Image (cartoon, rainbow, N blue to C red; front, side):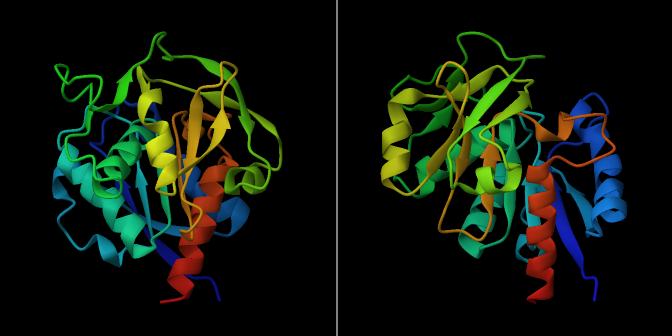
Length: 236
């Protein structure tokens, strides 16, 4: 029996954000090529106070600064604590680190420099990149045995970016100590993938897998999220 999974696409939808315009085609490709049916709902960042527990997957999309930082963090926390399959890309990756730092690591003053330009480096979990990654494409090395490695099936993968912010190295060890793992690094050794191994499916990337290829076939990480969502729906 084919189950249809409900997926929340969290972000402030805009035709000016290229990844947003890719979503309909990717959903159709997942249905047609992979037999994975997703009933997608666009959730503006200020509307995440609805019953997010009713979804089979949550995907926090690019498009920061978001209209509601607290709304994005609430969606991520719902997925993390509720065992709901989760993917965060670009801004979703950045806010995944922020949510984890605040809620799990106890960094109550943790912040994101894009949302709070005056924040001290000691409190910023996300900082401006030394070099912008807008329009950049590069190689990411994948940790063997990780979820990303199993989904990608390779040790090195190409990645497309469109961002100006990334993780503050000062706080990575604290995040690791509390259970977050970093399973992808770029050519400079900078973190590009984060996972939560104790979760059924919890993965975030600074790059945008939705920009991979010509949009007619979903990236393996997105296919992995869709498959996890269908499994979640089947288990209801």
